[in-house]
Length: 160
Image (cartoon, rainbow, N blue to C red):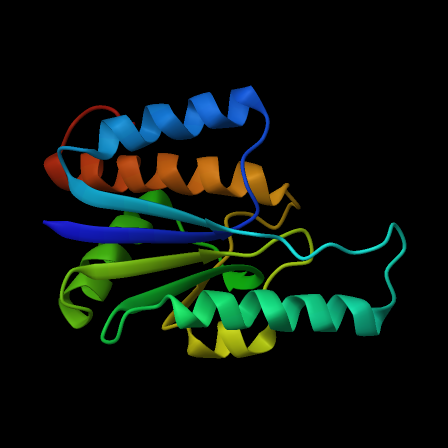
């Protein structure tokens, strides 16, 4: 069984995001052991300077990196990542699981993304879309795609 750990910067506050994330987490229960850890997002002024953003990303990145278990396969969700189809995502999960001993960690940054050191640690950089989404919605999209990936492997009609 896969052990999937999603490390996220920021909390889901909106009830509609919470409900969607909870629904997909419930659907994933038979397929994997899922853990979601929310880390605090660094507070920034309304118009942060590039230096303030870099400092916040560095602090958030250090917190993320500290929670990655040794030997885990790591996927960073980031804009410069490579997009893929749901079928390719399912195959990639299987390949990462083989290399990472079934321990997969997904990293989702806050409003300004992930620090370069975090991206450098990743075995795989994934873009969910060339469009920009709120990082809270990215978590829901990732959970849905994880569920879809397991359904693809099982050959169900969900993924069609």
